Length: 526
Image (tube, rainbow, N blue to C red; front, side, top):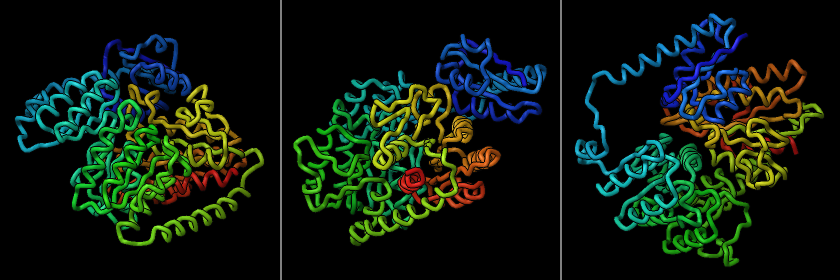
């Protein structure tokens, strides 16, 4: 095999368009691997690890487009690069061609759709703030999907929104479901009487889809962005979203989902819960014995407040409360399910070699990765990650796992200049095969998040990779366990059952929730 690369200085292209181009080139005869990415340091490191970096590419800057091809010979590689340039030119020409006129600014879009009351802003971070201001000043609620918005801008936007009775969801708010309409990455969930406010995008998706799987539904799903619950921002939109759900006559039960807020924000959330008689479930992605700054436990604040230690329990409690059923019965059922999983895990453990001691997690959803880290840390102790709970366990190289590891492939280091792993499975497939070659790995845990905006058929790619990884292990006389969950519903474009069946056919064990996957995987290696 031979590798050829081409760097195109100053040529920026949308990461999703580059992903589709790479897929088209990969199908060419004689081509074994292709990458078409921006020349960021993280992307170049990934190219080097994949054997796609030759002497021409290291000089590329983050503003340069890099085309890398591995092919059977030089002529085939050069033909693929020529094809790439041809396709890039065609796409640029078609984008400039005619067609239906589209608004070129937010202001012209507002004039064209006078009935709209929500704007979705998804542009590069340096431009996002100005667009969000335009939308707020026009009286629109905003889903600010963009990242890289300055902290002081986020605070100013949210203070303005609060003063004018508007929601500023974000920045970095990947998910919302407003009046049944999914914004960003969202799922087809039925209407019901459970309202969710979340500073965790995939956390909102996980809870809302688990609610749907249980036969219940939601009123609203309000995503506020992960930084909202920091000390600096103070939970401005978390509190506004909570107030909105408390005032909503259709919402009977409220769920608050967040990565661990600042202590002062936790106090504010609990205090606001106390302003309503609506039963509220807190899922703050923390250890079960968390406390507020004043030393009081939130368990004792009001009889309307319930706490959950994982997202599966969160959904189960919310559904029970929405139906007037016993919370304790719901918890007992979950405990029985955990015991059954542990017994099943012990049976699988006996099939492993003595060297197979470690669990590895490869995640598209940041909240799901963090949930796994918390559950594994409680069960296994030391867990390494590129986004660790404890900075002592930050991986020296995010591309190389160590002992028990859970990797968030949606972190910025992996997504600058390339699509999010909910859209593009390339990085996860490569990492999955890399982990399969490690003789110390016993189990690989995966999430699969489907729904609007996500990959149209992720199981087709991940399933093939799982089957290949199991073949790699079998050649070395090793059993390799794959365990996964699918965050989604039957109503999603990809279809929950279709994705689940495909994963199981590939040899994966598919469980109902990410929390169940994490518990099962840790039980195998305990």
